[in-house]
Length: 587
Image 1 (cartoon, rainbow, N blue to C red):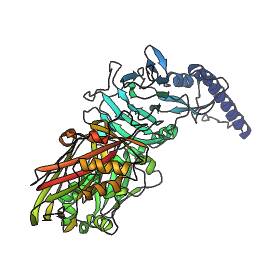
Image 2 (tube, helix red, strand yellow):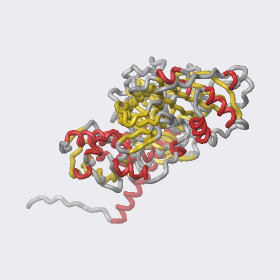
Image 3 (tube, one colour):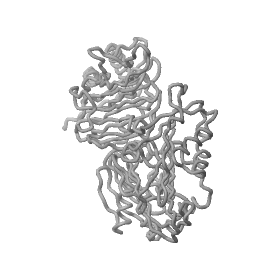
Image 4 (cartoon, rainbow, N blue to C red):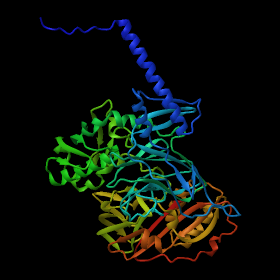
């Protein structure tokens, strides 16, 4: 007779008892581990620690978690730990512009758990290797750099180092192991909260500003120390998780943990011009995705070859291409296509997986060049819509009668200034982090008296307009004088006449600027030759005389110690064939 094995199943009541007993054991383990965590992080015994679904099943599990939890990122001020940096002040009180490098201790990149404060007296345990801290920067027009370096031997953020990633507020750039840096188009202000995070497993650095993700960067090397370099500030408070973060760090970590399949996520990006299928192979922001797609679109238009390409962050396959939208006009104006392909939603600072939680496609808008021109022509151009930073207007004069004369206007900008709105649109010659060059080509006619009428693409203009976006106001140097709001129109009229402008130009300047200059006192800087030779070089074929008037307006408490307009030497206005450019900047 065969031996049979009898299995006795526990009763339902016994199953419930066993489950409750196991739950109680787990809770005892959690309670014991929580006490250890409170001691480790100097947390009050009455504070609550949420284990966020992490359930240790044994003493070994508890010990594993305790051994693999990230310690707080620790910054040093000299030999002492600190969470606050206060600027040095002299006996009078103004801040000194002295660069000071503050480094954290080495962070342990192998740890897989972290404990962060989510609200007062409550903490949460998270399974993640993501290191993160926030800097609350207080001070008018702060100048700082925040990032990650290889080791504590770094005494300065050196742009030439291949072991440095930094966000610089002064020139609004992110340097990723390179010297030039990439523009962030972010203006940093007093009381901003800037976050810096590092994902060791992906070798990714990310930045946040006031709770919003602003950039994601891939690095070639693993970094070890967080760092902040301070030049102009009052106080910097550092939060390493002992207080609630402004950025939703927990959701970001949970997204990253639960959406690891996004690395292989396939979705479509579509607009009227194209439908691309994208297969992700890395983490990025939509803005970075857009920039990559623009390169692909421009190459597609230039070569007419179907898209099937692999980049460092995704694979892209063309599913549809609307050839009917690409005519000769579109090819000639491909340079401004980046302004005509936009997201339908304001989500450039989102990560790909946060957008694709509920969608499998990302929709974009595409505006043809002709549609863009029609929009501009269909409404009166209101120059006040172009911002308050700078409004250079380029006028051409020729004292001989000309019916149709060709010209080429070349504008080259350095890193102290960027280009904003333009009318008409120029052709982009080059755009990188140190130099931008643009070109208008067309014809002009002259009656020998008034400024020339310009013709570009069968449309007529009185002048060329370009908006300058000031990136480094301290680079705009020259003679300084004081003016008052009470007499601003009269004082500007006298000043502009001294600088060689005619009655119509003076009228246009004052009409444009008088409403913007509404403070009691201004220091006016009459930009010197460095503006023409270094900041914004202007050349126009056939015109050897270029007369440029660039004024920088800065609000001051009084003008007692500033020279008056009477001290300004008169500048001779050119005659014959020449160019006048006038503009201003509110610093």
